[in-house]
Length: 191
Image 1 (spheres, rainbow, N blue to C red):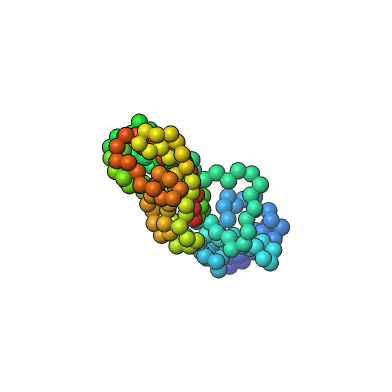
Image 2: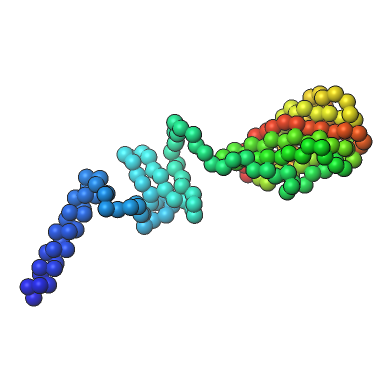
């Protein structure tokens, strides 16, 4: 019986030391912090008004504001040129479509130059636009019928992943022959 009591006393002493270390923040023997509850009911609470928690697999979330003083690097721009459905060109001399998503913000860079085969022109992007605000419209560099570069228009409708290009700011159609080009960039909120 004595060895059972001695074992229990030894374990209680060990638990007291571990609780004391937790209270003083000395987690030197623990390599990770684990919570038993996922979602907003668990996580890390700092003070009385700040929380950080796991909301889904590989997703760390806070319902509060997070300020990062350094670089918040996610991923580099991804080349989407080979995947995008591109309408309006028979062939290309330059075909570049890159995108990057940071949170719900999507950046798209495009540079398309080649021989026109259609009066309409569009590309697809991998992430659809949010339902609100309304349609995203940006000024781009446009070249139609082997002419000079001028201001054109790129339009991405809400809840859509197709960017339509126009040869003028008024939404002009393209010529279905000669050189056609659109160059520009846009950003929008992801759906």
